Amino acid sequence: MAMDRDSADYKTKYEQVAQYIRSLGVGTKISVREIARDFNISEGTAYRAIKEAENQGLVSTRRRIGTIRVEKKEVRQFDRLTFAEIADIVEGVVLGGAEGLEKTLNKFVIGAMQLEDMMKYVEPGCLLIVGNRVQAHLGAVGRGAGILITGGFDTTPEVKELADELKLPIISSPYDTFTVATLINRAIEARLIKKKIMLVGDILRKNTQVYSLKENNTIKDMLKLMEQTGHTRYPVVDDKGRPVGVITAKDIIGAKTNQSIDQCMTRNPIVIRPEVSVSSAGHKMLWEGIELLPVVDADGIMIGIISRKDVLKAMQDFHRQPQIGETFEVQIWSGFEGERDEKGRLVFRGSVTPQMMNDEGTASEGVLATLINRAAYRTVLERKKGDLIVDSSSHYYLIPLQIDDEIEIVPNVIELSRRFCKIEVSVMCKGACAVRSMITARIL
Image 1: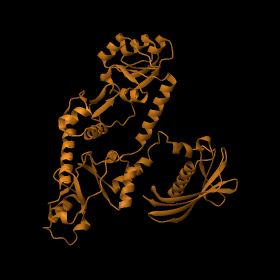
Image 2 (image 1 turned 30 degrees about the vertical axis):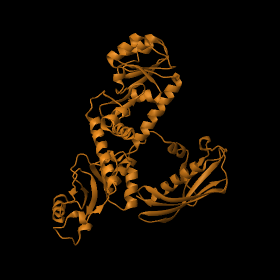
Image 3 (image 1 turned 90 degrees about the vertical axis):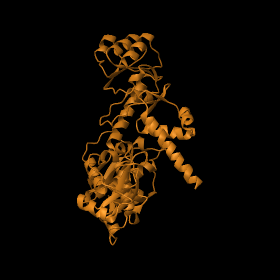
Image 4 (image 1 turned 60 degrees about the horizontal axis):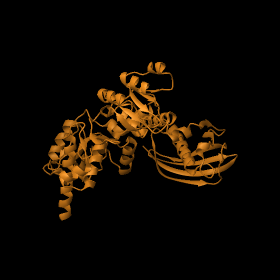
């Protein structure tokens, strides 16, 4: 029992720290050591609470400034970076205007031209990327722009003072202009890819009422709620709003109306966080055979629910969206085209590129497995709408493939049912089989 008391005390202390952080004013500095001392907890517990607050967007850790309380912003549907994010990307040091780090910027200007010409492109909310050109620094800040100084150079006290007054960040990076531009472009591409990935929080039923039951409710209460809402499944929560069970219409068959639902519900329900991908949620539902997932916040409090129907609709909508921000997988697969062979089969033809190589100078086994899975997915998609969740795959690499080898990926569906498929895939090169694979998958 002592262990239970310690665990409960830890949870209470952790909640107190989390509540304290939320109550702080914007701009307040936060110290792990001070929180540990004030709440009489370990520095590890204090650090964990601060990191969780950072994940929630309540605090931000900045180079040479420390951790401070920031204003929590709603998730942006556009892909503008903040000055603080730019500083992290280019490993920069903030020379002035630190209070404006959370501002978003609308465009970049590279200062590789004469001063007068450069200023024509500088406008409020942009970021000027320039070297050791003090007049350009002063002119950009005066026009409402932030500055990224490359080469590790400093600027004058006059410029820093003006930046502090106008809350426009001045960042110094040790990298040259070309490297800085490359790093920023990579960051933007990564954000476009993340935007493409749909999260549970994107489909959460925020604007509709979420119906739930308490443990001490009776079967009669549930029947009444079913009649009012037309739903047949409900999460069961405790007094703090934490999910402790799930109950369905099947669970109460034969139960007495005065019986409490905690005697019929399924305890220890599977829950999910809003930052998890919709695809992962669908995978979990399929594997566990469940139709309902409570969505919880960092403290375990239920903030909504998603159903299998929600997941399926979201994935259908996703496939109709334009694809922006290419992953390595998409880039590699883009070199292959599907066409019919003389037997009417769908085959995929392409060549082995340098990006597909391993250290030994042959095609990477991992890349080939990725191509095989994509070909299998495309083949099944022709016959059945849905997503594939691979159960198992076996790959036999028979012949090494070289750069510029022309290959043909030939999938053959062996078994296909409503929720299951088995596909054999051969990778052919110059008439010989280079790879042979067997894939079994579930269809969502």
